[in-house]
Image (cartoon, rainbow, N blue to C red; front, side, top):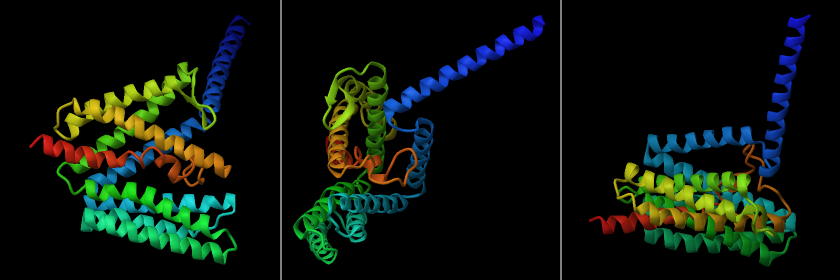
Length: 302
């Protein structure tokens, strides 16, 4: 009887511990708004895909950038249907997606001219398709042009960056800083977040979380800069805070657009994360930093 009672007590203690862990996980998921184990697993898989493309070749990474750019642009165009706007998601995605490849193959001036051309072509295509679908012509054309300009233009700089000395390494530093920024913001925000950063746009973001973002992004940059580029560590003191500014701005802008559209995620293509654009909101305005810093560091270190 005594042994059985002790076994029952141990079983009850284990059950209570499991319940406490499950309750803690539920609370974390409620604050995060996502299935955390699934999100973490998919995040690691996405990181492995990016790293794999980098290790294979520069060309493979540029192709991946083209694919990601096109899908992200198409997602936004498709989501506009929630506001009665009907630009062609396919055309918008194709026109935006070619820009990283053009920049890599033909250089900066070509990117500038092609960007202007595809923005105008995108606006025309958006107007025509909107007209055919019975949607407002002006807003459809404007949004097509804006998506190509912002998403395609920013991610198009990837093609330029990889052509510079250590450009790919600087790009990887920026991506590491962005991931660290998001991780630090989430961790400190969940632990001690009390003061909302922009409650009408993104209620879960806090000033405390932003402090965590700044610290983690800067530390990650200071560590990865000398390891990956050979430049002095203090370049991380420049890149880290800049990444926090651009990443947070991109996140808030996408949150504003999603609230206007009345959607939680741009799509459901990535389990635990939403859409491709939901993973790129902080990356889009940040990758031009890699081009700027790679050029700046190259000049300064000569």
